[in-house]
Image (cartoon, rainbow, N blue to C red):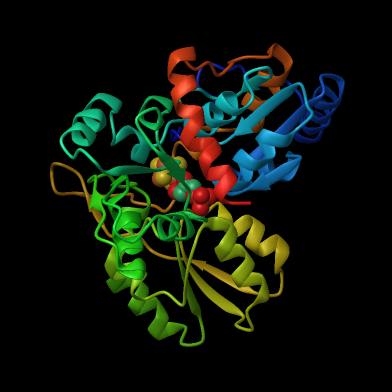
Length: 331
Ligand code: 13P
Ligand code: SF4
């Protein structure tokens, strides 16, 4: 069984799919819990959520919810952000092992040393970071607001940007800034192939190319629209084109297809991948961490009210400042 579909350590309830969904909704109402999902999780998890959104929208919703329990159907840093913003609420994640390769590419102690090696710099960190990395940050950004926040800093401010070198490079290119970049990347976005997208475009000449800024520069160059998941969705709904090649995690196609059922969304192909012996392996445009969130785990998490996301109080005290600064600057 593939990692993405496996229910590690969880004995699947003996309920039908429909009973499982009804139970999740019943538990959410009974416990005054709100279920928030990122666009990359499985479609059936998105469908049962009270709210779906990009990273910025999830943080904004968490900050203002009245619910007593917040269930974040996404990866761990999203749960941490909600827990930091809502210390008086119980924040649950269906699978605490659902991490993020980009957040993992920036260990807090190494990032702190990097920051200390560049005194006098304002530290801008992408939200895809651990709480400990946010604790050494001046302002957090998401792909929705990175340009706006960087542009709002005085032009002569020296900036460190971490951890995504692709997003950082893109922001440098469109703002003319020369931010110093941490060399992290997302393994899903980094593997889209510009050559394969060009070949696909030749077969679909009317298709517009939608690209998340975590992709490499060569892929971003092919874009008709670059943006966060929410921005790409908005563009796809509003634009007159009827075909789109989508260079981001394929979970977003679910909501694109829901919102624009008459249009065609084609997942952009990743580069070929090879194992150590040189054999071709399966490379796909799915984030295996996001796909660890299943209905079964969501059900158990609501029923048992665990796993609870906890953040060390000292780290949370530091990390909340750059997150709140971002929310303030994004109003
Ligand atoms: P968005 O902020 O665009 O939702 O992206 C989150 C993410 O994890 C991208 O890989
Ligand atoms: Fe992290 Fe990439 Fe998965 Fe987004 S798609 S959660 S950046 S590993």
